[in-house]
Each structure stands twice: as structure tokens, then as C-alpha cells.
Amino acid sequence: MRAVTFNVSVPGYLTGKTLGGVTESALFGGLSGLRYGDVPEPALPGPEWVRLEVLMSGICGSDIGNLTYKSSPAMEPFGSFPAVLGHEILARVVEVGSAVRRVERGQRVAVDPVISCTMRGFLGVAQCPSCVGGHHGTCERSGEVGETVVAGRPLGRGLTVGYQTDLPGGWSERMIAHESQLFPLDDAISDRTGVLMEPLAVGMHAALGSRPFGSGPALVIGSGPIALGAIWALRAAGYEGELLAQIKRGHEAEIARSLGATATLAPGDEARQALVETGAQGYMPILGDEVYSGGGFPLIFDCVGSGETIKQALRFAAPRGRIVLLGCAAEIRKLDMTFVWARELDVKGYVCYGQEEWRGGRQHTFQIVHDMLLETQAPVERMVTHVYPLGQYKDALSAAANRRRTGSIKVLLDPTIG
Image (tube, rainbow, N blue to C red; front, side, top):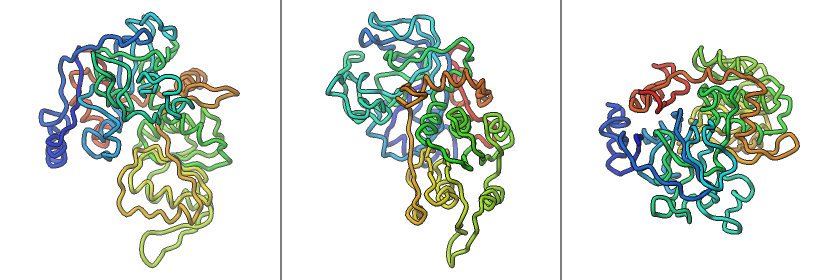
């Protein structure tokens, strides 16, 4: 089958870091660790596994961060390479194992890409506390070789499909998955909406974890799919207060409003004015940037994770406010943490999804997203701006990496088109 693979190596890292700013070939082309071609298609490892035909797969900001070597190396021990990339996946079931009960051949499914203890073959008392508690996104055995055998060898280390050498991700024609990963889609959900289930679930997991919400106002920083999805998720999860979206570009602002933002504002002066309107007063220290007292935002979602946005969130938060980190914050130099203690701030990160408390019961985040998409009828598919055939992955990655030039929000690869 045809697929896009990525291999991590010291020469590749050095090439990307030294030449990446000169030519995209060092990041996405012939000089990079990316390759497009035929790869072996693994057999089903057991009776609870399924074979899928990939219909669409998204390009995530974390993919761009890893391919451009801008991500922290801290997560490297929890992946294995070479790997077929792609963890935002819409697929169709083409083969089912004898013990599969959750899905049927022919169904469209969204794929939870996180590799759980169950998938690794660790059952019963061998499962880690996170997986036992329904929080497989923080599986504590992701750095270990599993008991499950794929293609004649034990399942290698890895936190998610797409960064794991034995389980091909969605940048391929076909893949395999454990039935626990799969969530059938209602016919009323379009392909372009269904492929967004994974990034929407990230926002929903954080929104549900941030309850009770309080009276607001809330600020969402960022204009990518995670930020836009977080706006929708906050509204779908019951947030009723004023919801401000800090957005850089006009078409993103329009989508943010359609998904539930009360208003949008630009970084800089507009954002500062919104802070002042909460009752904040600005003060200038002898050295450094302006600081504030009074007012502030009780809830801030930082969906960028840069030094600038984290700095802003810490300064814009109200006393005892909550800062949610959804952007993949990594190594940040000279980050002043003063206001964490001076304002008694609650700073919390979220990753992936899992079992949630929802409407009197427990459901997987993907199922909640699925049902709320039907209930809200929100136009989330507007986030999809570009779709490329799998073989045009270089163009797709360039479009995703150069948002200011291309106007991209969510870029998709479609293996079903030529």
C-alpha cells in the first residue's frame, strides 16, 4: 500500500535545523526524513482488530512541529520510527476480526489514535493506572514494548498511531486498528466533519475538565483548529458566559463567531483593551513589560503554547483564574512565572481524550463530540480549507506550515483521490 513515512535520525535533524529555513526540501522533500512509497500492510494481530480504508487524514500542528524539529525532544522516547504518519483519521471498515462487536464492515469510523494498554496486550492487573481510570491519553506504559505481536514482532513503544513503527497511521491507503479505537459516524455527519473528530475531541476534553465554568468572561488564544474547536467545545459543554477569541486573520474570526465566540479581537492593542474592560489597571515596572491588577479573565485557553501566548495568559488571568494549556508548549526561555504564585493561578495542561463525566454517566470524548455535532449542527467543516491527494503530501505540508501565505486552517490528505 502507498503511504508517507517519517524516520528520525541525527543527520536528518542536523539537515532540518541547518537548511530548513533555506529550503522546504530539508523539511518535507528529498533531504528530509519523509518518504512516499509502498510499505507492507500488516495482518490483523488478533480477533479484536480491524482493517480500515483511510478516507481522509488531517495534518496537525504537532506534525509540522515534529517535521520541522521545533518540538521538544522530551517525547521522543514515547515514539518509534520509521512510522507512517497521521493521527487525525476518518476511515471505512473493510475487514473485521472474529471477536469484533463495535463496528461492521462498510461503516465509516473516526479513529482514536492513542495506544492503550489494551492495544499493547496488557490486560487486567498489568494495565497502568491511567488506562484503568479511562485516561489512556496518559498511558504509563507507552515507553515499553508490548505483548501484542504485529508482523512477527512485539508492538514497539509509542503513545499514538502516527508516531509508532508497527501501526500505520492515516497518511496511508489502509491501516489496522483495535476495535476499542473506533467510533461509527452517523450518516448525517459529512466526511469533512468526521475527520475533525480527533482535534475537536482535544478541545472537548479540556472544556469538560474545566467545569464548573463560572460566570466569565473567557479568552481563547489562537486561531488554528484546536482553538476554533475549543470555542465550539466550550459552548457545547455548557459555557454560557462571554467568550472572546483572539484571532489573527479575518476568515478565522468569522469561523470563530459561527462556532460560538461572542466577539473576536486581534493580538496587541485590541486584546489589551478587552483586558482593561474587565476592570484591569495597567502598571509599568522599572524594567520589563506592563503588568495588570484587578479584573482579568477567570478562564483562558492558550491554544498556541508559545512564549508570547503563555506570557500573555499569565498576565491577563484574574486572581485565582484558570489557564488551560492546549498548545504544545515546549522549551521556553526566560518565562516569568511570577503570576502563578502572585495571582494564585491554576495552570493545567490537557492531552488527547478518554472517559468523561457527561450528563449523569461516563462516555468517551469521541462519542460526546459525535453526539454534540449532531445536536448543535455547528459548521465545523468550515475549518477545512485545503484537501490534497496523498501523493501531493509535500504541497499539503507546505500549505499547512505557511498559514499566513496560504490561509490554511485544516489541511487534509485524501488517499482515495489520484
